[in-house]
Length: 183
Image 1: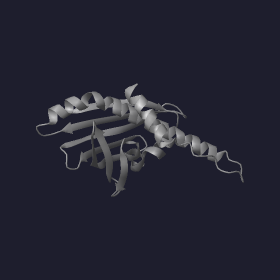
Image 2 (image 1 turned 45 degrees about the horizontal axis):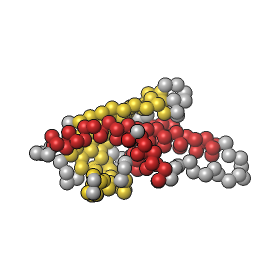
Image 3 (image 1 turned 90 degrees about the horizontal axis):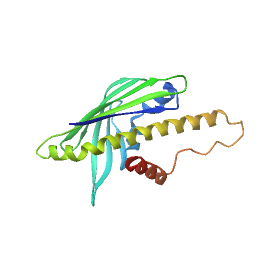
């Protein structure tokens, strides 16, 4: 098993952090190679990701189950790759630091099984912390961007055109993710 825990400070209150984080599809959209997210019910979803290692690119389906919703501060989840001997779980923890900031901690564990598990875990061990860090930072950035967009909308004068979306382009998000991943 490989595991990591990553913490970031979000420049948003706990309620605004939860407003973003309680939407599972928003989590799926942060995953590299995101293709789709099918919501089965309030606790279960199926994420389709296109992943690549070297020249090999393949589509994987990840069944994600929220085991416990205890918002706005805690969520526990499990996941299983369909057709691959990989499963795991994790948690989301949010603690208000003050009226405008929230400490956010994401933990994830990944378990492989079968004869290739030791090799898979040895290769994934160094990558998982960097991946989780980039994911946590991207989640933070999206929560803060949503808060800025809502603040602009609230400050909008009647009859004035709404402010442009603050969501960066796909290319900008990929570039930022790669910078965080590789320094």
